[in-house]
Image: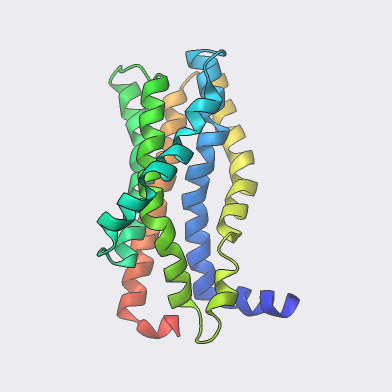
Length: 209
């Protein structure tokens, strides 16, 4: 197991890809870390937060097959970029709504989770394809086995980061819109880095060998 772990970890280009994806999953986890506090503090402590957060799961259950059919002809890098862009847009929707004086209520939060989930469904199946392409020949299964590493990293970092972010801006400064903005900017940073990564690997195919 240790030998296999070292085989993956020492592949720097592969690890860079996983680290970029960790940013994407940080944006994902903040829905479960930040939004419950926001709903309780700024909307209502009695709001059905469990139902609100379940929108992502229901979106995937209901739309995964049609979205897969609609996006099957999109290239893998493009599908992943769409997922990253949707992730950023979902948080910017909350931010600009707040700035424009539009009430950021339960309905709007449900809409943003839906947008994020559509992007997630677009990129998630292609993520494993990308891992297989990045892996050295004959090691696709080994490298795909580390697919959940970005999710674990994001949860570990995202919990502390999200807690600090909400306490600083949402509780102390009473500026929840800054929370939305910063998380959205993380999504933008992830999208930009993924674009650069895709561009570099396309220009230098040997990086996937």
